[in-house]
Image (cartoon, rainbow, N blue to C red):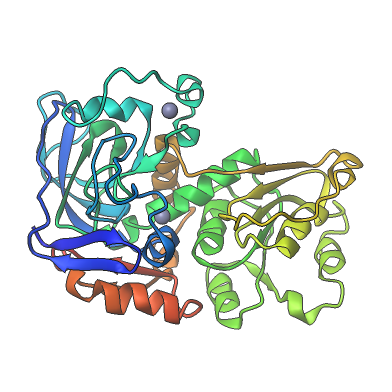
Length: 378
Ligand SMILES: [Zn+2]
Ligand SMILES: [Zn+2]
């Protein structure tokens, strides 16, 4: 089939001979891909990988697969074939894929990976998103959405309501990343939120917060073009570079609660980490959604202790997050046309390296999501 193959950092190739995945298990679903978003993670794999992908010659811990493999994990498409025990979707259904892979997915790859590995503690506890061996379809576990077809377990496939366009549906994945973070903040309707950073996940966080009926959403972001995106999605914006004491000024936006109920660090630099804690009101919850560079930062434990604030991190998503995001679209809490603002380009597989990856690397701030269309526009 047509698609892309990842060999190593800097080596992503268009090919018309990407192996087409086939239905093997009785719970497999085969999907013709409509759209698949290019993620920051894909860019990291391209620039400095393999990170999630196995090292050359090594095997993926869940599937046993080796490079080269087709990337892409933010996908929507149409079901073309199902295994004999699949009941939740049927051929012709429009679907999205929750692309994570974890201990329970090893059972799908009996030919290539040992079936004797016990479940990790997180998977036993029902938290597969923090699995010891967490990976994703399209990041090493199997052929991903930058190819014409994917095959994955029915438990990872969610049917879309009729009104959902397939291009906007590909955004369910990044919105689910943010949705999981908002859930971790135990966010209640009417509460206030600070989003630090207006990149793809920061903007997705605005939609996830709207889905949770947030009271006020303030996005702190130095780049004008990203603040404009945030405004289009209905958030208040704040330019930290315009303020001598940005943290106090953010906190003072909410004098009645002495700060925000929750904060979401979607940037991952020392100043946003500090702001995410200090701009909270008493008992507030700071959630790190950014993937941090592995540099140590200064942290004062009493910043949490004095007002019993919480700081935690959010990792990926679970199927329930996807289901709730789709439901928020159904309820109109996330308007389809509002989400569409995040789509800044569509490219064919042949154009993906130049007009997708390189465009996102060279013009980071002007772009949010570029979608790959492996089968042309469906
Ligand atoms: Zn992603
Ligand atoms: Zn596990």
